[in-house]
Image (cartoon, rainbow, N blue to C red; front, top):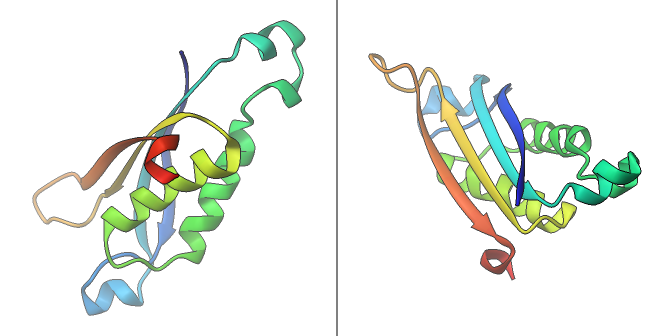
Length: 120
């Protein structure tokens, strides 16, 4: 299976349990790997035969900007679910990091892999 990689998507949103995190936008770093068969698109050279990563990225941005989850666990799972359910892919890896969450760490985050079976 082929991989589509969206690397270091840096967004701003509300996430966290502390009072200041509930009102102040903070950086959210997202990495996504989508497993898909790209052979049909490679032959046809037509976007309708491809997994449209631009559309997926716009949808992830919209979701992060509209959400205000308390836990990274919820956000990372929601992103995986929407990619699989809305775009028909079979498997995805999503990593969500909060670069400013811990004082002496570059970032803290969660990485998950999910398949269609996880959401049906």
